[in-house]
Amino acid sequence: MTIDITGVPAERILFCPSPLAELANAVHVLAEPGHHPGHHAWATATTAALEPELADRLLEADFMWRSTRSDFLLPARPRETLADELDDLDRMDDETFVRAALEISCSPRSVRGDIPSPLVDEGARRRALDLAAARGPRQAAFAERMIAAPTATRAWIRRLLEDCDEAFFADAWRRIRVQLAADARHKTELMRHKGLAEALADASGALTLEEDGDGTRIVVDKLMEARADARAGALTLVPSAFGRPHLIAVYSPGWQPVIMYPAASREVGGLETVETVQLRLDALAHPVRMRMCRSLARGPYSTSELADAYGITAPEVSRHLAVLRRAGLLTTRRRGRYVLHQLDFSVVVRLGSDFLESVLR
Picture 1: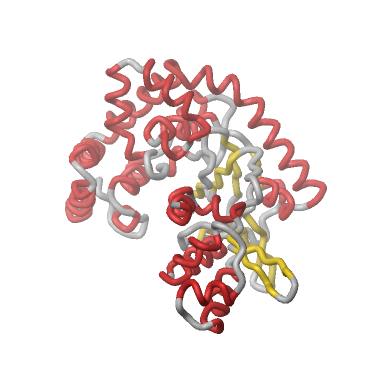
Picture 2: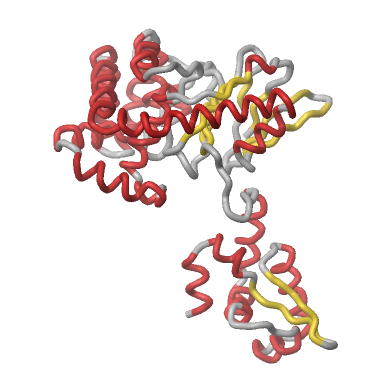
């Protein structure tokens, strides 16, 4: 996805932590602990200590942060305290708030700003409720409640977030806010002295800056296609401790673009592009290459040895090896007049333990 920042001055590009965004990340960790093995101990202890009533309310509203985040949970203008950011939400009009909430429960198309609001249009209301019902009874009930009583439901959401702050988040925020503030300062200094491209690269290997005759864009390397425009406003980049490994961007029309990135993100071995991952998965999708990997995982093989083992010609083996090599899955070394090939475990292990275990089985 791309964010157009053509002509946006450096002073309107802000690196800043947000307590509301981090609270949203924390409740996401509780809803999807499998996404965040590094926070397993925290999630287990926090879940065990939750009052049942609060746990039930979190479950009731978790569609707003389970798979992704409602846009209002990533503030474009972060404040010093959670209370200040919740006050900003209170100042948001009902239609904007409801659209942002229902975008997650229903569908982005059903709540875009260029179609009637479900708060005032009966057809849009039925469409939103039908889409929410397809996601399950909890989403359907919450969508109906949000449309019927938006002001009361917003107050309910605020109380829920305040109760989460009191129950577990305030302690966590005291521990991590210094780290997040330091990360934001470091990125700001990098941008000031070395430019935005350096600051983006330091935030995540999935963020790059493109400049050409058509303007300046930030490219976010994700398995999605979307465009956002910051030219008339600003861009906010929010560091997160609980958010790793997610990289989240607000791109909906009418909202200021916001990027949430893992603070001090330094993945072992570097972060691969989506294109590289796709290349590797495509290379492994062929059944012959998959079977070859079983041999190559156990030791070095020459082309002729693989041809004999799998009953195919040496040129066929060479073509399959070339695909695996282009994908970066092999190491090669010469032994006399033979070239030996072997699976590169440092690369393969990052594709997933299930694949590695299957070829070693």
